[in-house]
Image 1 (cartoon, rainbow, N blue to C red):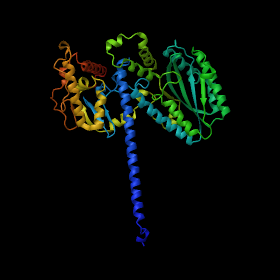
Image 2: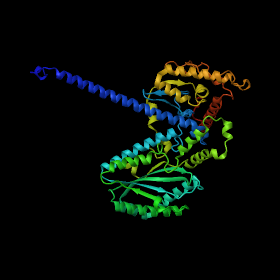
Image 3: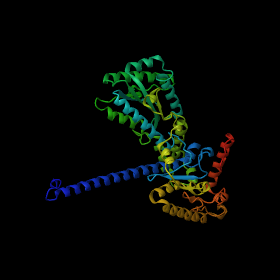
Image 4: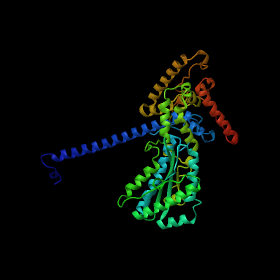
Length: 483
């Protein structure tokens, strides 16, 4: 009986082979898609890391300048050198300082915003499942090209406190009760336009007890505008127009899920946004500056006229004004309701990238002195070593080091003898300055640290790190400094 189930013409066998081939094709397609996604993610990571490294020399923020360059303080460091981990998908340097400047750093900012995005998606999903309503408001100021960003932010924060915050009074509580405003999540961002200058604004997601009708939404928008404009005037700002001061959006029936996704993207996608109507985001301004000075030496940059340095002035104004400005704020009780334990302070957020780096095994280590003298002294090398591990393993890393050594010899030979580095060009030695687990150099193996001189670009970095380490040790004398 069992044999009769197979047709005599053999089509059953062909069908099974076809099914297996189809399954194999599907698996192959999934593998190819995963590889393409990983490649795209790594390419984006590379772009952000390169952007950060390009910005660091021009940014007046010591924490940002040290990001992914200086090792963490000795008390928190597991090793005296700089290890790299690799999980088979992405290589990462560990034991290096992370600035956590959400508004300034392209890399840290992206990681923090990704965590905030995941939190908001979780909250929105739960809120939608419970059958509640959502709305999104945008609050802007009237601004002019003469207005400084620092002054606008001060007005903005005070206006919020008067209208909806700690100085809002009982009337705002009555409004919230009337329209079912249970929680809110506020995000800060800014753009810059040539005509009207800085444009700081708040995006606010409202979590409502139940969806609003079109009339209720229009009425609530009017109330929000009246309170916001009164708060702005009390804070010393120019009265915002009714047309642009406050916008409140609510989903149409049946579009709640799509609206929730749109809100998450609008509120937490600042690192991927571009300015609208001729305006630029701060990172667009910074990118324009880097493009302008690409290939120029220090002397040529100093000789640039003021109008050509305007983007640099804007970037530095932004960095100073945005410092300490919280990126995303939950209203009281919201995080507890949704079971979200991500810290409120951006500099306390542990990104997924950091978690993955700690969980992955160490695949190579760079001696501290070689890290300063041979790796971060030249732009792009720390990223190039990571990419070498990802694309070719240790063999490709060794070839990369040989290329660097040849470049250093060529550069040293072309330098005025009076300005040459003492002891010859920087040379990284495999097994002494870079090694893999199980092949660590002997404790008494000499390193380039004793050869560093003031002419070496790595010497100042190493001296700065050691000075910081000493200061940290003086501040906490009970902790040992291993450098």
